[in-house]
Image: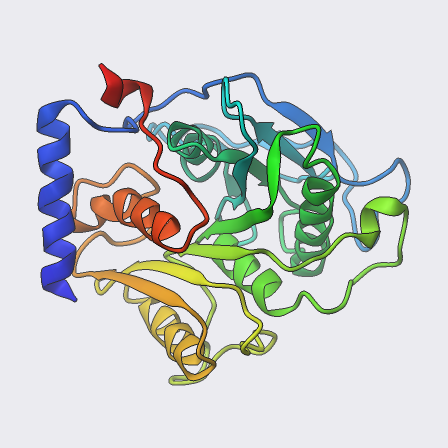
Length: 303
């Protein structure tokens, strides 16, 4: 596994040297997003907050941290000039369910997804400390996406979820708990299917609390969607959970790939200079292999 990771790392370094990189360390969004509130006025289920959303003071690391989210929404970044429907990925930023690292694990990811021909949809879910509300938010989000496939030029059979850290846990919850809604039907949107077509988990957190066992509420079975996992051995707090989740996928005979590297730590998004920095290329190759993404050459690669 380490040799394979090193191979992709070398390939990544060579792509940087040749100018063929499809994303930058500090990318900007490729288009103005469409912002859609998840819930009709005064109909949000579960627990909310009073008061305005907050952006926390900068730590000098170019990370936008937001909290006190009381109006959950999605920001839809469409692929520019696409003549055919594109895949779509709902992106769930991390932040320990207390904040959202909104640019590093959200909008920057949407920019990369656009560069490879995927509509990126950044989910702003309820924080802090509202796991039930966050899960209702992601359920409503995927239904809204499915309801709008025609208007947003999305392929209805190629809608996935992608999460980082706590967002990885949230994506895993949706991947394993799609058979029943957690809130009453509000409108025709809620008639849509909850199951994502694939999942991408990048340094997911909270997948295992007891050694060797999945956390409660993650019933992996043969209906769990194909899954791509990214993690590193030096992420001591959460690597065990990814390994247990991978074992559960294997036992259920769910198509999966585990990009496991020695170094990279936690919370890097697209900004790592370690071995794991090759994960976007590996993820793109996996999506193509599984048939969720056709070959797409970025504008940078055409130059």
